[in-house]
Image 1 (spheres, rainbow, N blue to C red):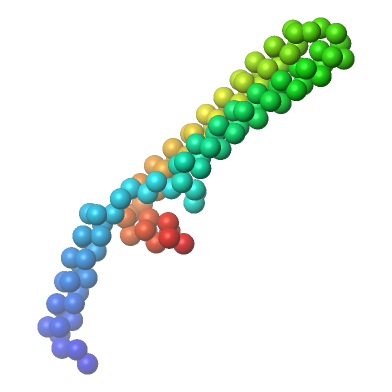
Image 2 (cartoon, rainbow, N blue to C red; image 1 turned 90 degrees about the vertical axis):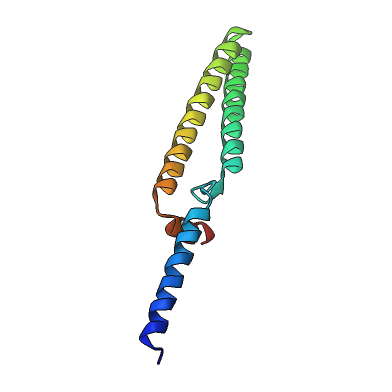
Length: 115
């Protein structure tokens, strides 16, 4: 059985190691288990998808109704607007999760980011 002096010395060492880990722990670049690069690609994809869906609907309606190019332009702009809104919502969500992760103690961030 370890002596009380050894136990005290081990606890002191553990405390110093924890302080060093907290001081050196980088802020986590992850948001919801994904890197920020993946979140950026998701936002770009959402914008392009909105544009393509709007373009497709506008092109189809123009073809059916013979109103070329007015509905194509209108729905392309609406698709762009919808893509921007979705992209901004994703950016706010990523920012909120990043702030939540930064607010947690460094020990919890490290354990959860690895798992």
